[in-house]
Image (cartoon, rainbow, N blue to C red; front, side, top):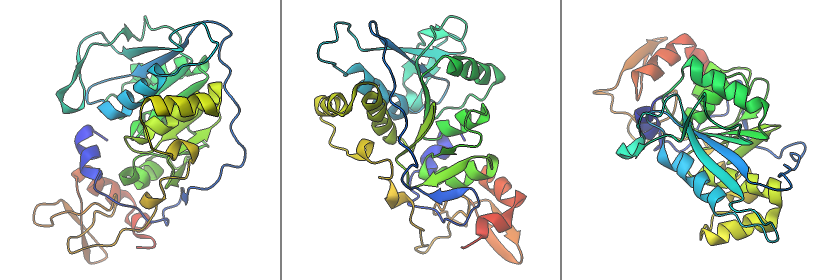
Length: 297
C-alpha cells in the first residue's frame, strides 16, 4: 500500500467483522513481559525509512523516545535514536519532507527497538535487514500500514496485529496467518508489536517506555509532550474504528469502506451487482475472493 492509498483510506470510519482473520480487539490473555534496559548506556532505536515514509508514523515515536527522562539514571539520552535506509541518499517522506538517513543496512548499529512506519519499500534487502536486526532486538514495532512490511518478513506469522483502520481487510486477505485486531490502538505479541493508524504510534511508543521503565516514567513523558491521549493505557482504545460503516449516498469500497464516486471509480461486477473501489489495487484484491469481502455486508 503506497502513501497515496493510505491517505485516501484515512476517511474510512470502520469495517465489518465478517472477514476471516479479523476480530474485535479484546484484552490480551497475558500482559507482555517487561523490557529490560541495560544497566548503563542508551537504548538504540532504529527508524527504518524509505520513500513515502509517513512523517507522523515515525516522528511521533521519535519525540516520545527523545523526551524520556529516568530519575537516577546517569546516562543521557535514555534512547539513542537513528534512521536506517538502503542507502544514504535523501528520502522524500510524506508531504515532501526530505530526510538524509543516518545509516545504511550495512553500517547501522544493532538496535534494541525497531520502528517501521508506513512507507513504499518492499525490497528483499529491506526485508533481510529487518529479519536480521530483529534477532538482536527487544522489540520490533510497526505503525499504521508499516504492518504490511513487518508482515512480509514473516515475523507476524501466527500472531495478532493491527494496522490503519482502512486496511484491516487487506491485511487479513494478504496475510491469512495473522489475526487482525479491529479497534485496537496497538497490539503486543511477544517481541513484535503493531500500532493502528498514524497517531497510534505515539501510544505504542509510550507503552514501550512503560515496559522498559514503568508507568510513572511513561506518564511523565506524556506530560512533557503535553500529550493528553490515553490510548497508551488501553490497547483497545480504537473501538470507534471497529464499527460497521453505513453508506450515506455514495457507494463504499468493499475493501476499505471508503466512500467513492462511481462516476470515476474502478468497478467490478459480481453476481449481477456492480461494486466500486477507491483504487484499482482494491478492485484487483476484491476480484480474488469477492464472497469473503462481502460476507456479512
